[in-house]
Structure formats: C-alpha cells, structure tokens
Length: 97
Image (tube, rainbow, N blue to C red; front, side, top):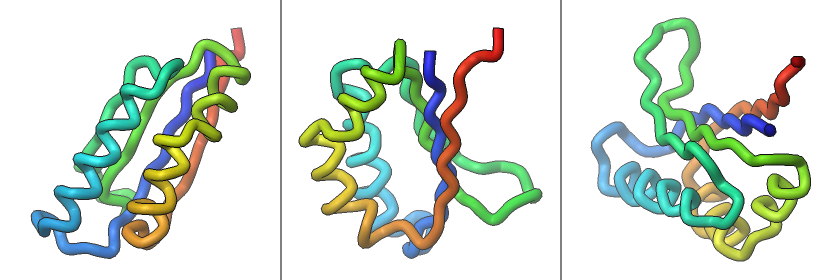
C-alpha cells in the first residue's frame, strides 16, 4: 500500500471563487482508477503555513504510477495545480511492517 499525501498553500484568499474551483477540481481526482480513501483536508494547526492537504492510497507502486500519468491527473496539474499552488510538500509512504 502506498499512502500519497500532499500539503499545499494556494495563491488565492480563503473563501475565494478560485479556491472553491481548485478544491472542487481536486476532489474529482478520487474517480481515477486505483485511487482509494481519497480525502481533501483543511489545515487546523498552527505549526506550518500550509492550508490544505490531499491524501489518497494506492494498492501498490504500479497503481500509483498509473495515477501519475492518467489524463485526468495530468489535466488537473496543468489546468489548476500549476497556476494555483503557491507552495507544497509531497510525501509518499509505505508501511514498514
């Protein structure tokens, strides 16, 4: 199992139409084959300055790689991610045991 998480800060003000459009588009990533347990997350802590997180799981690295090149994912990156995200941190985990 691969746990894929990305935390991000958008260029847009909270509550803006652009923010809502980005989050709505991001939520559609859950329909890509191989994506499990998709979550859109809002940061509530004060220990970093990221505002949102996206989290999902894949059964294996092959499924994760299929997701990365899937047309819906690459379209999202080009259309929304590239113009909307100010900064991000991507973390990919697999269980130790």
